[in-house]
Length: 399
Image 1: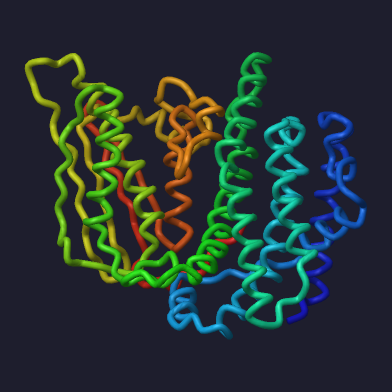
Image 2: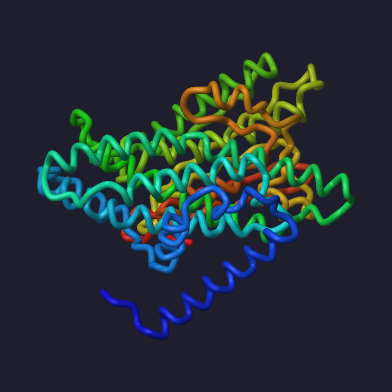
């Protein structure tokens, strides 16, 4: 469908302003040699900004379920054709943003590394010929696997770049709240969640069938069971760090199930329980006379939402500190993880010390139409409410 001329004009104007800001930024803060045009051919750069003007197409959990329910060859070819067209648009939007970040962030080596991963993936997709049949689709799926692996460490590498900028600004006694950076990171990581689930879902449809699964989506996901697995993982980390761990009591019907992505749910619950364990352990570490009170996790089944509440008596958060918990630069952990350990690690990385846990968990919830809220009583404890949209008809919130 063609966009209206007025819409195109507005988009073109926005892009022109973006390019102008990028040019001005490059003259003042971006080192020569780090701009897109210094490292990639003019044709590639023009193609990126042309795609950055195009509108992204959102999908819903229900659409992915319906589409993947019968993954015959024709369906897989249609899925590949959609991704072949859609992914370059999403990647181009992110590249254009990465080229135009304030405070000289675009010139940081780690940000440049991420930008170039996105450009390489954009190029690979654009150079791939039109997909017409099953053999084409199989080759395209192999390309998607390469792209999925290439982008595996985007979050920790971005975290290191942002952390480096914060240290520099702190030393210069300049503004360290960086609202523009937080806004960009929210959009960037939300987009990354979308890109990875689209690619991951297509790849998973090629895997051997798994009971009650359509690709990455479990049609009978038990929030109580996933919560229990998350609790076990979080408590094992607490035991390793402190030598002991508070108990976690789970309330809810283990037989209740609904369609969801278990890996997303595990990530969110693990983060909330981990925070509560640390808060309770820190508060009661020196109290040899009393056992630390247990953390309570409640799973409630509503008509629209499944809600998971995690409650602790870890002392709470001061009211003045509440806005900070949603920023990417706030953490109560002792120090950031070293990048050497990040790059060597297999599977999801716990970014302790970077302050990424809660903001990214909220993005995972919002991606499928849910949300995450934190209510705290300083001097007592904290309640986290994780809302999951059980209807699955919410469109992706595309940045």
